[in-house]
Length: 395
Image (cartoon, rainbow, N blue to C red; front, side, top):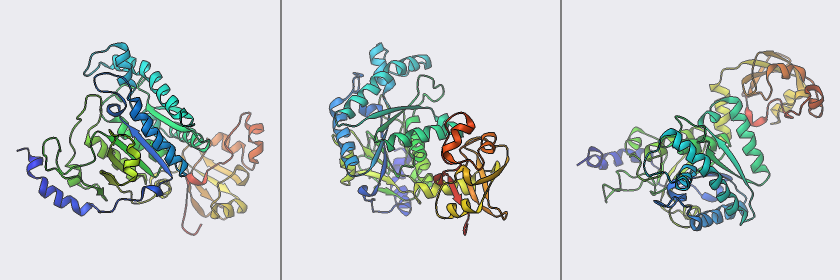
């Protein structure tokens, strides 16, 4: 008997210390990221899309939007679709073949989502990312702004890894982690990872018929992580281990995450009804988690001095506009962390600045409407957006 199966009862009892029996109310979530894997979107062995199933998922998306929620999609499937068009054999592909399959399949994948969403009157916006886009500050801010704008305009961003240029990124599990990073980047409060299993079991269910599904995980303990297995399907890159890595990323960003079996029709509706799944609970909301990260985890690269009017506006929860900036110190790039300081020399907090130091100096005291005239190109209205700011207590 494998060690994990033999120790399953003990692991399960210890894991229950990190489990709470209550699932969150699905209707409370206002910005939802849905991750769809290749094994769900593409028919196994045929490399053709499961259009009927996708229509039911998009129906769920439409219902969620009609209830007032915003929805983003992280979709795999480009390589799986492209390999069928190109007649590539089953099994692992060489890097250059994976990139070629992605180049062909991405066109089909984008069309599939665009046409299926359009049937429900929903506009799709394609966003291609690599993991590096979620790690490098400037690229992170650009991607975050684009997705935020698409959501504000009523579109559904459809995100996929840019496999045509990815190198080491083309490996098992990246879209699970990418989905978690995207959810945190976009300020989602829920990430739904659809898989071909119902969630996290206390032992591998394909090996142990008596394996028990863990409904809710309040804390990612070592015992919980020990239950993860490996990849199980032909097209899937990830196994439960990568999904737990995704959960760690998500909850650190204030995003609740749920793993559910997406193979049946209307999978989102099934999750909303409380169907079999595993929920991973975040200890805080996305805004609080982001502000905690800005306030305590980033090294400041400069100082932005503000006038008394701007200080009052910040205390009232407003963004910092260039008109309220007196001067800046230091050399920083767009997206770097800077200290906010008032005229009396008090530190008001920290924030992620929307301009590099050279441009920030040029627009000190300038009204937002005049930024383009000063810089010669359009710029952001805020020097530091309120969502990118963590104020000190009492500021």
